[in-house]
Length: 252
Ligand SMILES: [Zn+2]
Image 1 (tube, rainbow, N blue to C red):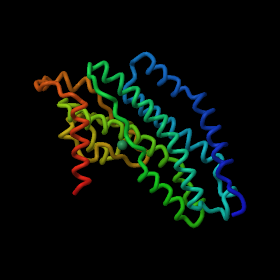
Image 2 (tube, rainbow, N blue to C red):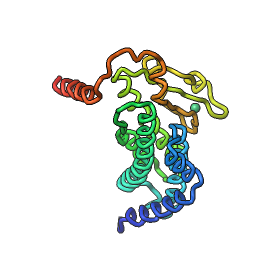
Image 3 (tube, rainbow, N blue to C red):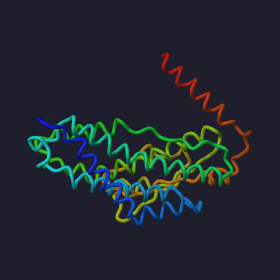
Image 4 (cartoon, protein in one colour):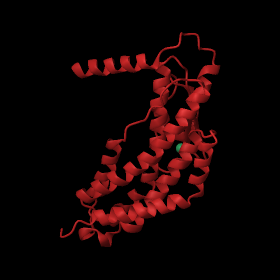
């Protein structure tokens, strides 16, 4: 390869991505909702779909077979391209989710810290490998469409999961809701419903491509349940206990 095409590509992609986001009515509306203190996980979900779609559009505009060496997506291009763009999506969506979670906690009178999920490196690795394994980029470029939206939606699901798990450890009984959107498949129909943390099906946070189901929760529900009989547990204590658990696991 003569020339490293990645810096120029990323610059063009970022520019289009930023411009499209700045013009987006969806983003304007969810930002407004957050400012008014009314945002929920449904809004985080809307933002994720919009961010995923805009990043996919930006990538598709500039990443084409004719700019790639031998019309192939080599690992070192695929790896940097995906890690850069998906990390951007992660930063935007997890940041917004954190703000929403903070507001929800405050409204429910919970003095709990909003939990932020990790950037899912495993999922990114999966996308990178699929792009790299194809003989020709044109055989695999569909990966840069819906799968990027699905990845971005999973940031919302991961945010919910992390906060629900954390809150349930403090003695709260968070309820998770999975709602169908449009013509849902049987698999999704099976998952729809409202569950307590313990009853929730294993697949509650999973989704197939083009799945627009909305997973959400509101910590406010956890308190109305009248299960609030235990003494308030200091979240710092729980964090310390969790840390100890992980340390023990590491020792084994
Ligand atoms: Zn679905």
